[in-house]
Length: 256
Image 1 (tube, rainbow, N blue to C red):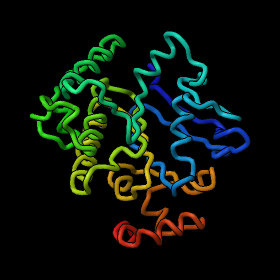
Image 2 (cartoon, helix red, strand yellow):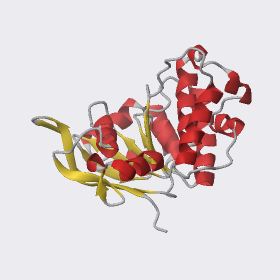
Image 3 (cartoon, rainbow, N blue to C red):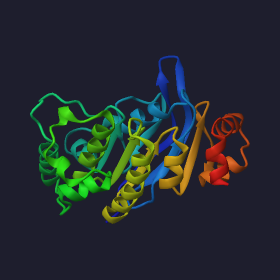
Image 4 (cartoon, rainbow, N blue to C red):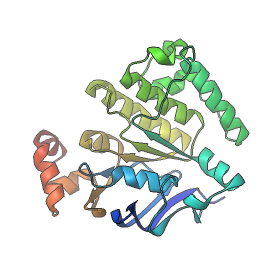
C-alpha cells in the first residue's frame, strides 16, 4: 500500500492581489523524518499551513493529498484527509466546557480514530509522556491548564488519532525552554514509533535543530535554502538567512 503523501506543486497563494507564497514545491510522505519550515515573520509560514490544509485556496499551483487538491476534497475523501493529516497551530485548543478533562479530549480523539479505522494501543500516559507531561494530567480540567500545558495537550490529542502526517505551526510558543527541549526529544521518539511524518513550521531554530534532519528556509515567499539546519546557518547565502543567523548568534555557534 502506497504511503500517504501531502504535496505542494508550484504553490502560489495569499490574499487578493498579494501572493505571499510564490512557487513553493514540497513533498511530505508518511514515515519520513520530521522536516522544518523556518523563516522570519511575514515570510508566509502560516499561509503555507493554510494552503496545505485547504482552508485557503491557491492562486496558482496546488496542494494535494494522494494526488488530489486538498481544497476540493469532499465527502469520504475529505474525511480520510482529516483523519490522516492533522494540523495544530499555537492556539488550536479552545476550551468550551470548563468541566472537560484532558482524558475526555483523548477519549473523543480515539473515538474519531476508530471511526476512521485508525485504532492503536497508545495509552493516555504515553501520549502525555510524549509531550513531557506527567500521567496525572489526564484528570486535569482543560480550563485549569496554562498556555504551555494547553499547547502540549493539544499536540498529544492530535497524536491520539495516530495521524500519518502532522503539520505543526509554532507548536511550543508558550512552553518554557527546558520543557520545550524535553518535549521535542520525546516527540521525535513517538513519531518514529507511530510512523508519523511531521512538518515543523516555526522561527525556533533550536526546535528545528533538535527535531528535523532537514529544513527549508522560507523568505520573500520562496524556499531559498534547504538542507540540515547547521549547513544552512553555517554558510548563509540569502540575506534573510544571514539576518536570522546574526539575530541568533548563540544558536548559530552551537549548530556549527
